[in-house]
Length: 478
Image 1 (cartoon, rainbow, N blue to C red):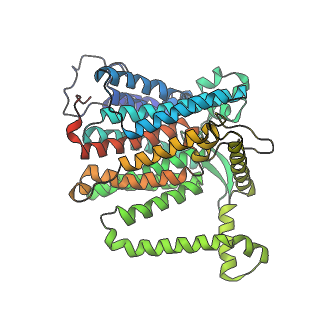
Image 2 (spheres, one colour):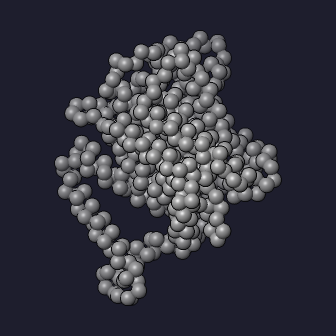
Image 3 (cartoon, rainbow, N blue to C red):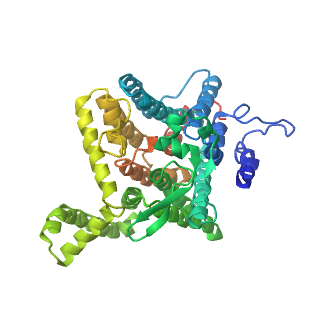
């Protein structure tokens, strides 16, 4: 095992020690991970071991197992009494839609895809259930958030080493040696069998470069995970004082560097739009920057207006400012070549056409379409639900997002300045960015990305519960 993983394992138990308010176990006793640890410690351990899961090639399958263990402990500790929030109810309905749609999977090979997606959804649901039932103090929530940020910092460091050419491993994973040959030969099987931190690619303005994916399956999912956590590094920057600002500041620069080398255009735009929303509605300094934000939004509207006449200006060949603006937009759209744009357009058309054939319960999973390199029912979380689970799944996922939005409302007044209130305010930046990013990305394709998304959402829901209904926590914290 590489030295970096050995060092990580050596510190895991110290990082997941219970907060000081709890009585420590006797020093002589050996604590077995996932056996003697509490549910929240299980979640933290699972996250901290992400580089190990990646090295073994099991990170796409391990989450529902480990979070399932934590969920069983929750049931035992709470004597089968659970706090069922509205997001949990909507997520449960979505899982029902997923299971029903599984009855309509036609291709035998795609049944494995269905199982993979079901595992990701189950992991997200279990993370939501465990955290909203057990994270009942700000100390625990803050500790869990630190674990997520630490894991992404490790991913950013690995990305930096790969981009610099200092460490570009090609590790044959353990699980890859156990996969059937037919599965290992697929594009999905190949990325699991041989673990790399990126691959050579081409992008307009960058030329040939090393496109990063770090501990994630694909670059788009690494870029998604990056925009999930960058707002919370800004939160840490705002909370730090003096020289302590150095660490979150450098972390932000590191993750932004990684984001650039994922060339995730949709993710980057989503992060910026989320930042604008946060600045306009939830920044404590919004009065002083409202004019600047309005100016930026006006420029964005003008850019959209120019986009609508892109085709006309391209055909007419008109010059001047309009023609130059159109050229910039066109270069941005086709920065990776026409193939990416054409493939996505074809996929969305095939997805909507497939939905019309099975509108109620869908096809169960994405499906290969002749003439397309990308399967229908992919590259959009919302269209994927519409295609895979039909109207039932689409209504469930929209209801889920609305319920999470309502459940994570930041407080006003004095509570907005508290650490918990600040977390909810910056959570709006993260949530808006994730909602927009999911229009053209499906985070459930990579279980690690999906788990990070729902761990953060669950922490926000728990924080809102802590602020609004602190007296309702009847069970002992652990």
